[in-house]
Image (tube, rainbow, N blue to C red; front, side, top):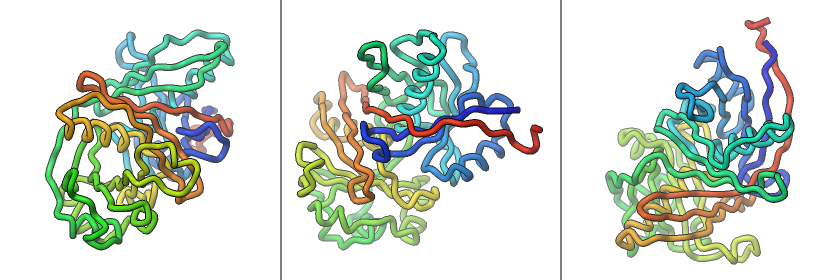
Length: 302
């Protein structure tokens, strides 16, 4: 069977910026093992597979795979998949509703499309779960996970803590942009301190704007490391960003927030993520750039 796919750069308006994503548009009939191997073959941090929705009122059933396994929810795959489906509909002369609803392991994920002159220019997802604040981690262990020293960890706003709105992350505030620049995912420490908590990923951030012009107007600069999941570093992580904005909201007694996050600068793939909370719900939005499209046929299906 001949199957179509597209690739996009997500959370950017510049080609070869943001976070690359592959979307398999007609994945019906593929097994879990095949999807996993296709995700490994693409080699991106995530690949999505679009299947018919279980419930007729929903847009699609979407499965998300990293090179290391399947995720219940992720940010840039939802934004990119919504863009890909909108682009496909536009090419076919079909209309899509303003809000697409994806069925995923974590629950239903609504993605609202924003259009200009009939073309989709931006998409915003709502996290599928209310925030849960899980275990804390001592600064020494959090620093080890990031290849840093304990003094690089900032704790006056909050201790390093595992947080989830659909996918869990250890969220760590750093003392400076320079510390963020030095950070990396130290895999042995991830195995020691994270794996036992059922967490694969660390999201480190700072409120100290860097010298890079791209970052100067943003509120938060972040990096995400998930070496246990086959992702040494991710250039734009919507699920971590939406968890972070929800977490920061709880630290302000649930106040509504609207923050801009940058990510990927140290990788040469600058990404801009716009996150907000409203009435206890958390959202993240961004733009996409289509990159490639094509077809493949698996030998086993010939």
